[in-house]
Image (tube, rainbow, N blue to C red):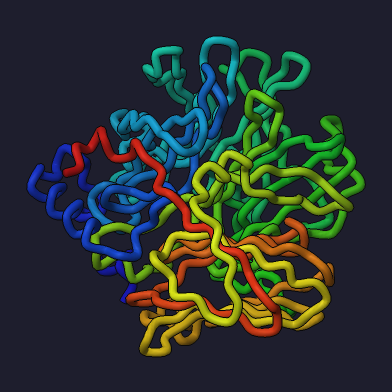
Amino acid sequence: MSLNTSWTIEQRYRRLEDISQSERESMTLSRQQDTSFPCYHIAPSFGLLNDPNGLCYFNGEHHIFYQWTPVGPVHGMKYWYHLSTKDFIHFTDHGIGLHPDEDYDSHGVYSGGALVEGDRVLLFFTGNKRDENWNRVPTQCFATMFLNNEIKKNGIIIENEHYTEHFRDPKVWKKDDVYFMVVGAQTQNEKGSMALYESENLLTWQHKGPIKTKYTDLGYMWECPDFFELDGQAVMLFSPQGVQSSDPYDFKNIYSVAYLVGDRLNLSTIELEGHHDILQPDYGFDFYAPQTYLDGSGRRILIAWVGLPDIDTPSVKYQWAGMLSIPRELTLEDGFLIQKPLTELQSLRKEEVVFSQTHKIENGSFLVQLDIEDKEFELELSNLKGERIVFSATRGEFQLDRSEMSHLYAEKFGTVRKAPRLINNQLLEMYVDNSVIEIFINDGKHTMTSRFFIDNLENISIKGIEYAKLFYMDRIDGLYSSLKEN
């Protein structure tokens, strides 16, 4: 039984103030016992972390919010938790940024984005409310964050008049003194869409309609929409639900992520003109709800949730679930979104180890670099029992196999993921952090992001290539201070 269904509504929708200090300490202590907890990925002290929210560069820092359910590792009452950093190594923990403390967000502050305007940040979010019959009443709302990081809610700006109750996750940008918002939506005929709104004053918004593409029947809901311009083209990034494919690579998870690259968004016809076929940025088991933003140097940065809705990982028994991906810089090349780890992460690298065949690892947080040239190969992470995950490649495709882990889960969605091999000679980077692996393949055209669970991880071994480079990774710091972790 899924943890998400074994909890009662009353249990899941308890507020933070209803959780005793002893309960918080007990959950924190349980999480501290978990050797699968990451060192250089953002994860919760306890409870559930899911979507990244409100990403922005403001007042000399990167600001990262994420959805947090403090009652336990389950979807329930959602808060926005707030961190900031100048270098992605040292973080300031600001604690909860947005509380579900108004009537319109009485059942959770749901996901959304940020827009920097001078000496303030506008934080857009979905207010989640349930009526007496447990019908959802979603509204799009906003708050203002000031230079001292104080946040003030401004209330509802868009009520739901055109879509089903699935109407959430606003993302806003400004162009020529006009504000535009996309919202993830389900049309009245239960089709997923990215709804567009327009405003000149932030308070009055005009519904323009779903953005038109050639994909008129792609799932029943598009969550976490993002629209941005990159290298002179227009990009729609979203997380469609209810999509399956007979293709060996695409849409194999319970929910996946997709994007469209077009020439421009025509604001008169509300059409993404000249767009290519739909693509996926990631072919792993656990990549969802990515959000992007521009930093002070003009880089387009992406951060995603390493997790999926309706999937429980083995970490739930330690009272935590979910983490954020490492930050990735985006560029466009030949219609593909290219993802590269931010250069700041190089500061986490410690000594370099060059090995062939098998290397006994000192700890589970490291980076592996493989120069695969025009070869087939296999890389294995294992323990002394032979429990393992295997990443391999033929000349035509990559494969990640986690069928022999210590702790299997979500087997109904398969234990193997594949991705096309588009380039023969390439340098692969694999970021491993105790129970997560992020693999950058095809020169960044794709990634494979996945959780894995191997007790007492002991060895890394390679076949088909002469050697590999390994860098142990340092720990990021500054997290959990507002929760008074021991």
